[in-house]
Image 1: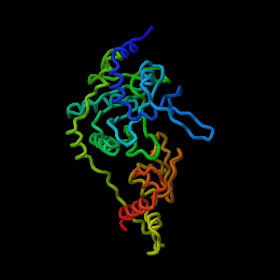
Image 2: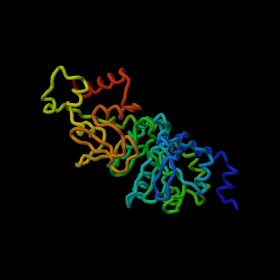
Image 3: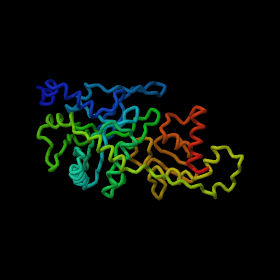
Image 4: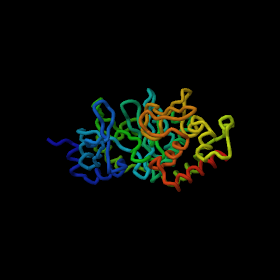
Length: 336
């Protein structure tokens, strides 16, 4: 016998398409949740170790909404743009804290949608198309206005750019059955009650969410400070400086990787931080005085490597013209 969702989707196929348009950032690949709650990209492995990734389909989305398969949702599209900013708070008071933010922003004409999760919740803001960089600027600014940082509440997207063939951060696609708990977590209204009593009605609402107006976005970007970088040449490291040093050697000796990378990533006292080049939850980035390493496999070691990846180049192996451009940018940045 067909369930309520089956009948609703058969009668309202436009809702399925609208939901896909809102939440699915890319069609060429998709993640799904494993029984332990983790995610993997659907793929076929070849004998040589390469992988072919399977594309997203509307049939998969139907299975997700019926509880037969649980998909993840990537936040950035292949061009590093998004139309979603999400706050993820899984602390004991996470749902309450996000609810308070939603109520506050409602008074500022910033619509948001509060979703329960296994621990805490997610607060979704739907926006006009934004670059990953601008989305993170806005998210950080909204948090900072309340005395919060991304250490207090996780901010999605986690990346400003997608690097190479990476797909970036993801969240569980709404209304999917959590494979670890078996629960389906819905959305709440401004009073903390279910947004609608039936899943089909919540689905209809979230398929056509209210977006943050463009004027509000423009005002937030105008108020959000650009990331302030404070670079200073370490004269001790440059004590063996010679005018004959090559540009790349000048850069490597001018500043320690730890001092340089800490301008972009929050580094703790042990030199560890969240790697910005993949969806990192485990502080995989280790930064030293003489290099850096990502334990999840993101290649690179020098200041130059980090800057190339941060600027969104698809590979560390740049054509000669782009390599010269990167070196010129870094020399200027460091004050040579």
